[in-house]
Image (cartoon, rainbow, N blue to C red; front, top):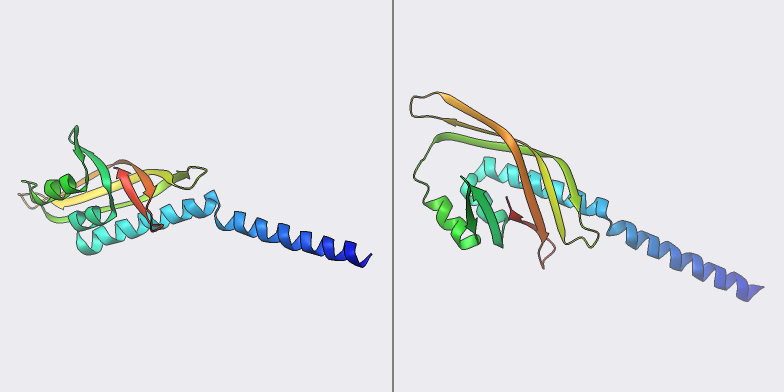
Length: 150
């Protein structure tokens, strides 16, 4: 009887620890990590500007599509952002994901939602552009999320 009780206790502890581990590394947790990364990304844009934030959150193999052209790789992204010919004043970009999903392995995810881009044009008028963003996220070796498509 004592042996059965010890065996049952050991099994309960074993299964309890397994279920905690599953909850710890679950798709819901990974989705929340991506939402938090999106929030940090958007906040950094507000604090340090679009170029610095996009470069920081880009994976080495990131791809941007701008004006129907692809900017492939982080180095190309840096050059693209540094060499933009049109500079605007009072530039503000903000967004919030409406939906996030993640692979069952927790290494890829995607998000989409609404963005707002405001700036002051050459006449001093405020221009507002609204649209939809779609970002693909890839978990890096250090556990952080970086975008591979925007």
